[in-house]
Amino acid sequence: MSVFLAKRITTLVITLMLTTVVIFVVLEILPGDPASIMLGINAEADTLAALRAELGLDRPVHIRYIRWILDLLQGNLGTSLTYDVPVSELIAERIAISLPLALMAIILSTVIAIPLGIIAASHHNRPLDFFVMGFSQLGIAIPNFWFALLLIIFFSIMLKWVPAGGFAGWDAGMWPSLMSLFLPSIALALPQSAILARVTRSSLLDVLKEDYIRTARAKGVSQRRALWGHALRNALIPVVTIMGLQFSFLLAGAIIIENVFYLPGLGRLIFQAIAQRDLIVVKNMVLILAVTVVVINFVVDLLYAVIDPRLRGGENG
Image 1 (cartoon, one colour):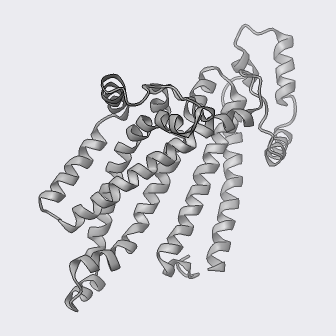
Image 2 (cartoon, helix red, strand yellow):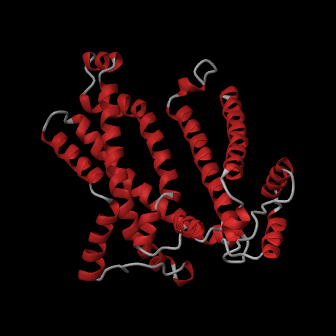
């Protein structure tokens, strides 16, 4: 296990270093002067010079990269030119909305998808299987923003159970805040649960065809026990992989849903920063989101070893 963990930590560190290099280089090779892009074509020369000095654009490239990394290690993400506040404060405010939203969506998706996938696999080529596959196909086909509008019409306008948009704020209390995130989490969970249900079903069907499952059945093990006691755990590895990817997407890729429900989350912050040409926010937000994906994949790798102990060995690590 120690060898497995050491390899994963080494891979994590190298990947994070390469991520910073790629993001820095991509922004460096973009055509145009970043200061001119941020201030516009009508900016005065002295204003441009002051911004270039503030951004460190008058320094050599390698010095700017090292300075950026040192600032990151100290928790200094710079100051937003649009909001005139530290980027770390902006992210802290927005992640307090996006993180609970992503957690609610992934929990709903998992609670819906895994049981449906198990039901479909255990009733392969029977009516229940066709029903689950039809549901999953529908969930993938329906645009989540359109589904979000339907949720608003039904639950907010007709039934008046939950607010149609906006965020109450955690200062208003836990329940009003969760109610503000309830419809967005459902809108995000629908397509994700449809995908996860199909993956769960396919993975289980593949495992149920393995020789050890047939051997267990030949020895008198019931189908239910073979499914829950032998097949399910081994079928979870691709499911956990998809869940990790989905959580990364839900944390920052919910720009459309956040705009539909007018939620000031991370996705909306990125959208606003790009529209306002706030490259300081864009650069650091892209880095944070990339690091989030890398760290989540690292956690997923660790979960592999928990689910399947064979992966802890050096030969398969």
